[in-house]
Image (cartoon, rainbow, N blue to C red; front, top):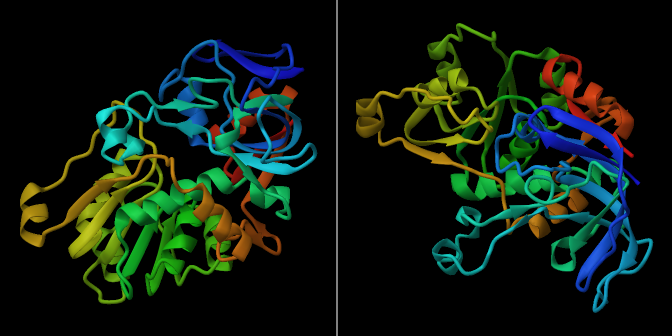
Length: 343
């Protein structure tokens, strides 16, 4: 089979490798399509738990090809998706019921072989039924599960206001979930008009076109329903410059959620007196481990959608052989929204 194989940061080929055999308790999956996301750029650079040699790809929809010994939950030909993350189960964080903080976490597509390949294996307890979902919807399960965890972390109050800064795929999935999670007003701010049009089509109450630099903080704060900031402000770009905007735009007593994946060495400053005096909570939301069932329920119900009419999250598709071009598009193509690889 063909697979993307990295030997070092930025060093990859689309190589011919053996089809993996499913061991006991494993499922062999034929990959239909796998989503490319910002995390894959960090992995390309050798960051974010990357372990070489590496086959990335952690957002997948596929069909069951073969079952290892003892697997009875699935049938050959069944459409499935996979939760890529697994906690160790025995570290202090796992024993406290906080597996997302597990220091021994493994991830298919990060430190274990992933889905930018024609076939892949996964432990059966990480495989989820995706029958009946359009593959373009099912491939969004993993980023939707991260958004579910973000909503849980933010502890959205019914009737509150929320601002998502960043209109990428994960930002727009999160914006939809914030509305279903109780926020009465959800705004999305971004510099790219077509992404804001998609945000509006997906139900955002307000879309705000902002420049890539020199954002008017007071105007952004004043665009909230109360005029004095949003109860929840989400940084969904991974930019330290954007993160600096969040606390000033957060309403007193509100929450800033750092949701985008920033460079490991990036930093931003906050005014500690402002956080202290206005009792602002600053939280982080990293990946997920326990949110796949909720994500699938949200996608099946239509409360979270991958698009409306011609306003779709998936804009670009690349063959496995064109993985390098897909990375280039993710880095710099302003017309690209969600990119998928179709082996």
